[in-house]
Length: 264
Image (tube, rainbow, N blue to C red):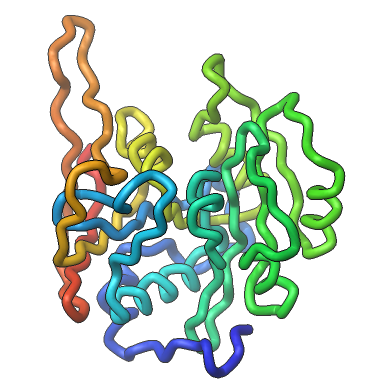
């Protein structure tokens, strides 16, 4: 559990706003082949996640940060790409009073994450304030024995996932591995490549809920932008754009939070 100085009180009104967009209560008898997937991130008014690749950029205000930690408490796993792990050194824990931290999952197909005991996610795990990550690496990739020992000592592990012909993970394989590890829900937080790949058809059919925090700022050109690739039909004509349905907007402090489902 987080130390008292770091915990966040949960406003009584918050759960009612977001529960309809979150996974159902854990079911130990669930036989689903994939977890409930919530895609959530914070963006500027010009759809940017950060000022530039590899630059940590704070967008969310305190109210929407509390919401993010509440969302974490409602998922059994939280997923980011290796680029976010390298750039942000995130903790990936839950600071809500009485809330349980999800299991961090880091997509690292080439085993690029050269971490040590000093990274925040392991520091928190060592203090009992979070959980050590499961690092998904590509089949056939050599993993440093020292890093494996450190990871396993804190309760994490490497998980091997098949890669496609381009050396990337397929989302169906990633979600299948998450389900096999026993996680019924996963909250995908970033970064840009991960988010855009999930918003592109047909992968967006795997997304059950979308929750986006919009901050009242422009980051300008050169940032990491949420803008999925357009898809075309057999004749080269653009297919209908991705659109949300069952949309709700909730103001939180100076931010506004958009909730919805991808229209099928």
